[in-house]
Length: 282
Image (cartoon, rainbow, N blue to C red; front, top):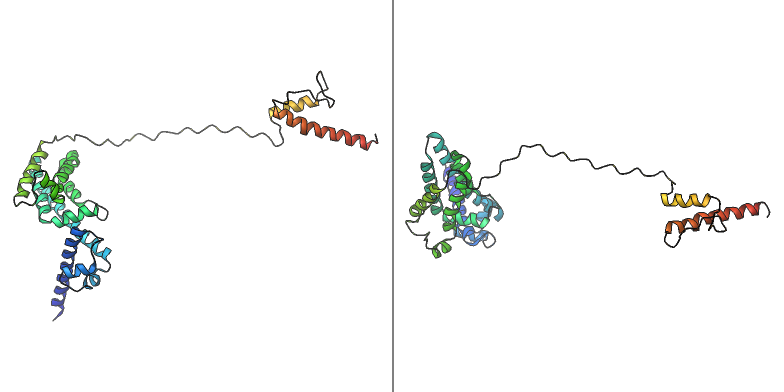
């Protein structure tokens, strides 16, 4: 017999914790709020939020998911309303803007909460809601959704700045007056997007030419042209300008390859000649 009352108490405690966490997270931010403060704000013990939600990170995510679900429900409701009955552009804009601004004013903590989060946890559900609601407007939907979201969101999320600009977002008649202003702006926009997105290219990707193959490496022990030229000079009979070893004189000061051949190749020939003389007993 006590199961139903206990269940109702648990549901009520859970809802009270979410409401208190939403207010505190929106006002002070995630890092500045403790689970004990949330429990006290909900009228419960310090450990009750942890009992229902575990760590503070988990509670924060649940609070944001609940806030995002509110906007998703609005977008889906307006989209289905448009699908059921044919409505003209003016009616779609007016109903979408009035419903959206009314929700922002009624749930100011949700606006500040999502503004603090910056889309890191649940994305931008308020923009998605308007985009869904305007799904029947074709290509102009995106620019219109951006215009409506910007004009409706800013005064509620930054009331001090709005007041400095002459718009009191906390006044009783703000929702109706500001909705009418946004409707007038949206209706004045051209139906053709001012800055359409570029069409996706269907051209085949360019064919990249293969780079030319590198030249084949010379066989092992094949001298370079400069060395081959000098070696050929070495093996020819001595001519004018020849040295005692029979090597044609080259400008060794300016040609390091010739100098190398003279020192290594010719030196090797001298060693072989000396060895032959020694073997013959000369």
